[in-house]
Image (cartoon, rainbow, N blue to C red):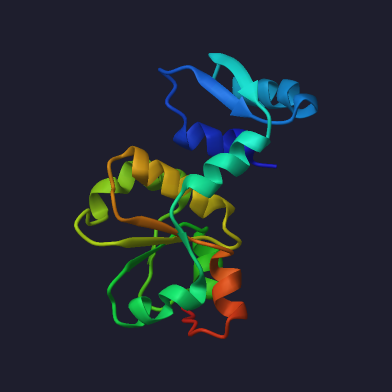
Length: 159
């Protein structure tokens, strides 16, 4: 329900846009993009493209990275809204809303591995993709996001 807001944060208005959407959704999404001033929408791919792309991104399970997180061997980048982060997050994580991520790339060290986290794994996939596009080479998405971390019984910090 915030598609055009989020798109407005991360889409480069100077470049053509292609949507990944089902045919029945494409026309409405184009209208929403145009309402945000994103006018150069050239076409769309079906949702199978997202699944294939998501499978190509580096991902990890919470239990597989928990020890590295505990030891501080990873920068944990939480891309959820601040209120979500305040309600509970992985200890020692850094919170940058994924829509603002392109503006804060210099705040993320490029010489350390980064674990990207959101609530369920969707926003973090987008953020992982943005970081890879920006030249980061050690980026991993947390499958299932913070929900999976909490469900695994791993430590949670609350502010």
